[in-house]
Image (cartoon, rainbow, N blue to C red; front, side, top):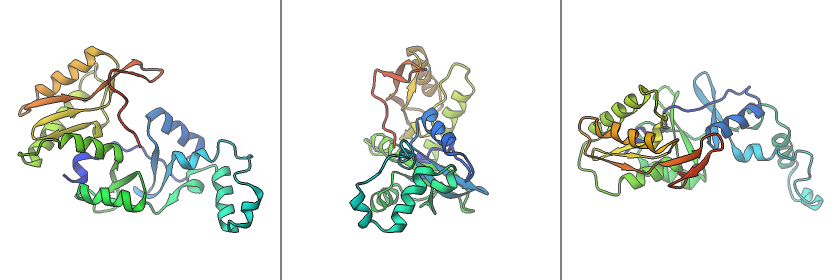
Amino acid sequence: MIAADIMTKNVITVTPDTPVIDIARLLMDNRISAVPVIENGRPVGIVSEGDLLRQVEPGAPRQPKWLELVFSRDTLAAEYIHAHARTARQIMTRNPITVMEDTAISDIVDILESKRIKRVPVVDISGHVVGIVSRSNLLHALVARAQPPVRGGDEDSRIRDAYIAEIRAQAWADLPDEGNVIVDNAVVHLWGAVRSPEVRKAMTVAALNIPGVKGVEDHMGERLNPDAMTWGGWPEPPHV
């Protein structure tokens, strides 16, 4: 499998001038932990929950006074910027690591481990962002590959695209994050959450009716209260 097989294609992004408070709302509303910062279609940085948490109490001391003797002035200045930043440009991690659409999953795992990061934007040959791969996507892929694949990737991709198109055409459907739909050996694996048992069953029926599908593995959960984001049934899928 490659990045294009498991990446989330509908990437939520911000610009360098997006206010920090708006980024915080995006993370909460979309239940994600980071957003790429895009300028002219290309990634110039990334902002994570960790960057924003430093702003919770910007006036509070972050370390004992004696540690100021240990940290360099540059380090203390960087801490001040994170605590008082107002836009993505001021708070983002610059020059983010990226991968190509055809990067092997094993290589992405190595990158996340060696660089100690939790997600990586996927870019096309021109450098424009076309997706993002997180640890959650990799965990989904791991489960989907529990059975050795015997079919070609092109057929699985066709099934996946057909299913997502079908769901998007239905008014009743809870539109899935594309990273929550994985097809392996013509078996559709569904993750994420839905608002009712009826919708959950309909999502499964839709997959079974896609030509070529051999079966459906339902890993979905049900939200008891969509507004409160309370979960029932299966636990919330891991987010990074």
